[in-house]
Length: 438
Picture 1: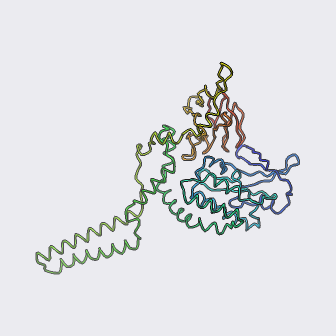
Picture 2 (picture 1 turned 180 degrees about the vertical axis):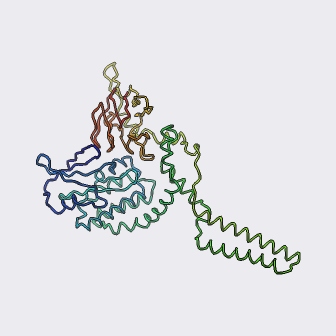
């Protein structure tokens, strides 16, 4: 499919051309006139005699772009296929066939913040193996350390090759894990409330303060698992124990008031009364601890070790690839490309811009959503995932990632998901922030 992108004042669009589908067709009318859960919003336009479909992709990233370096785990697979099944169910209500969904990873979009997926419905003649490209991508980008994700992906691939892929059967692998995970996520979100914002601010002031949401999640899971035992006891049991102990304490008081007791009996009664008070206090603390309050983090807790930073920005090229980029020799003169002699950095320009972007270790994604980008710039005009810098054929390229306020090179705005080669001296603008490439 011939894909184009368009940016207007407030929205980004992916544009596909209609070939054989008239505007009056049922599929076209259902797609453009309704908001179907899970589908990208689509509008039909006629320009220069051509029928075009405008799919809104504002603030969304393609699956291929987001997981270019891999790392697809079981949690993402659960979310992807649960939402795919939900979208198929919603389409059935409009009598739309599922085979018209374009499931290539370049056309499956995800919200970087909520991790919700959106699918593209294209009312032209679909490909026969409409799931194969998606499964091939998942096979290549699956997290090799997540054994459950690896097993699920390869099993789905085997079923697809044997024409035995049935979504209802596949969903049985994910539904139970997804429901349990969803409950845990809600608990973790409450315990991690506000931390990502603190991370973004700290990382903006000091890059060494960067923490990914994954590290917060691991810590929160440990905190939740080590919570006070009261969190694991039902409220009914606690109230029952509290009432029983309270009755026992009152009984001890009544015995003391209405019976004459010797020294030995008095000691036993006092011991029983003190034990009742202790159990009573313990039950009260258990009830109070049912509402979990996360401990406050210190600044030292957010410091990332040098080893983590080095691993995060490790150079991704193998030794063989670096050897292939050695400069050519012409007689006694060695040609040294400017990319090896320049600093490969974007320096902030202007009084308020103190940000510098290092382009020596690529790819680097820039934005303000902690955990989804390599460098955080916490500015109002910067999108959650604003721009990506990568290396293609030895040249450094800049790609706009559907940013709201745009990415500019020498005053010219880049179209969404399009790339431009950087040259020394180029003036780069991200929103209102200006940089010079050296």
